[in-house]
Length: 102
Image (cartoon, rainbow, N blue to C red):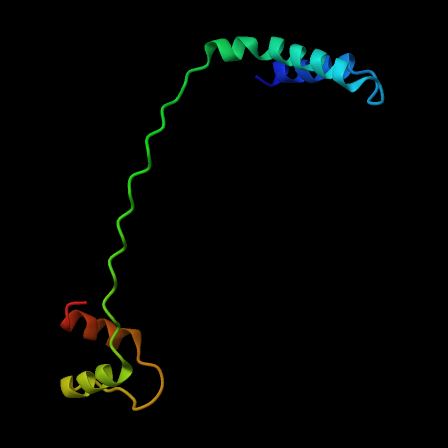
């Protein structure tokens, strides 16, 4: 597939000896040369059918994450050691989400 395209490029380069020469005349010759090289590919090409893209469903809204106060209160009620300040461990968050259906 690359060789015919390279041949087309060579034909186009030979057809237009200088850029300053008459552009309209060489442009027609270049177009004809390109058409000739691409003709076998266009003759065997198949049209593709495109379907309209399926409408996108809106993403499900995630439930609002529990605030740290609720998680800490739940953890203390469950007897899980959790600090009063700072980040809540991922393990405690997983336990909270599992207990609350999240």
